[in-house]
Amino acid sequence: MTTDFTFIDADPVTRFIRHKGSVRPLKPWLMAATLVLLSGCTAAWNQQAADQASYALIEEKSSLVPGMSTLDITIDRPREMTLDSYTTNTRVFDFLGSLANSENGAHIINLDQALDLGFALNKDYQLQRERLYLQALSLTADRYRYTPIFSASANSTYAWDNRLTDGSTDPFAADAEALISLPATAVSADERLRSDASLGTRLLLRGGGQIALNLTSNFLRFVTGDMDSSASSALVGSFTQPLLRGAGSDIAAETLMQAERDLLYQLRDFTRYRQTLAVRITTQYYTVLEARDTVRNNFAGLSATLSSLERERAFQAEGLRTPGQVGRLEQSSLQRNRAWALAITRYANALDSFKILLGLRADDRIMLDDQEMLRISEGNLQAPDITLEQALELTANNRLDLFTQADRIADRARKLEVAADAFQPGLAMVLRASVPANNNNSASLSDLDFRLTDYSAALELDLPVDQMSERTAYRRALIDYEVAVRAYELAIDNAKLGVLDAWRALEQAERNYDISMASVRINERRVEEAELRAELGTGNIQDTVDAQNDLINSRTQLTSAIIDHNIAKLALWRDVGLLSVSDDGRWQEGRVDSSVNTSPL
Image 1 (cartoon, rainbow, N blue to C red):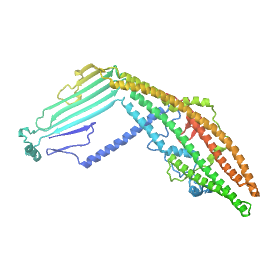
Image 2 (image 1 turned 90 degrees about the horizontal axis):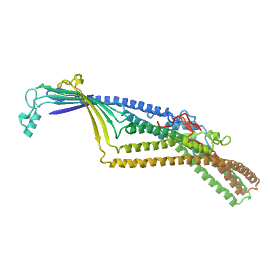
Image 3 (image 1 turned 135 degrees about the vertical axis):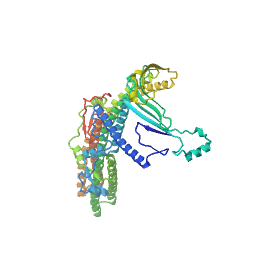
Image 4 (image 1 turned 180 degrees about the vertical axis):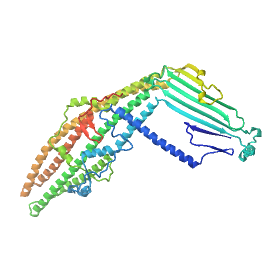
């Protein structure tokens, strides 16, 4: 009967006790507790080591990316934000109708606070952090391959016979002998212990070579009966270097090179996402304010229509208006009431969607600061201080995603070289040295005799007879290179198209603003005149209805033009690549760090 026990990395967790010819393990609960304790400590230590290495790599490469900050990249402990510190609203807004009381006690959030909340709680932003971390973690594994890697193992085998100490036979063994008719002479009465141990290290070189060193000790010793023993130890070192296929750092270290560049690309994507998220939060913030302002304008129009209707009904009672004339105003009031109710629903939906974007709960009670509309409405609209030609030129020189698209062409070119290298024969030089023990019956590592070192040198040749897979890979690499070139050209065109769209949106918003301003002034005078005529009894109901509707529409269009202009300008700076975003989401227009090196390595 033989039992094998293998200990990996020379870390025995289980101790066996020999008692009355049998081997008994430690109690199961003690073994389980020991394993849990050791695995818990190991897991916690390794997690901390992985974090330190990954964050260090992100810090190392962040200097290559303009606008990249490493203050807000922690994945396990993101910033905690609550609404308790924000100002609470105590007013009731009648123009919100059924939602009037819902904002009493709600937390008022301005734009800066909204950006801060979004950058702390947004679920997609947390996912971007994790993707960045995982890319850095992957690079730590690729770099680790080029460091000395140690390994250790031990194996023990304990064998004994089936006789008890009083000379009788173990009942189980006796039954087994009878079952299989085993001759008595075949039963061994010896006990023996065999142990093998190995300690080694390996170093992979970026030029494709590999250095390996292995120390082994194998011994067999009888612990009862015949005490003859056999043991041996050896130290073996080798060096392998490809000479043709796979030789050189450009070929052998391609995987590491790509991993280094992939982390840089992920950093660019992360920085670009921060810009996009800041624009999204700002856009939706203003969209919610616009929806709220639409509610306010529709309520004002409804109130004015109801006031006119009350007056016209009084005139009808005196016989100065016909039922048909009053009915027209009644129909207008119904339409305005329906538009007001629809505007309230749209505002509520926009606010709820904005909560989700920030990372808040759907039932959190917030309202946006109306003062933000006043801030962007003061004075004339501010146009960008660059021309369209300058914007198009700056786009190609500052967009991080375009840098990545250009670098991917270089990546495909390297992959093409690797695929072409695979057609070469495999020729490797192998140098080997082996140091045995000076005593063939000794298991002591101190008995290694370097005078007996055995040296050898060899050339290993692998002729490329079947190259179907290599041919396929090379043709695929050629196509991938052409795809990368076209993708870069398309990315340039799409980036410029985005700039053109933003520029046209700016111009259109400026025209809409001027038109809406003039329209508001005209319609205010029309409403005043219509109201005055109506009070004198000489007015036309249709003129009154049209003037009020046009005034409401022009005011709504004015708000929309102001918001559209600010959003288009923000999108322009983002698409040009000159939008600087801090860790709390606050942005600054027209800023770029020209001193930052944007090259991949």
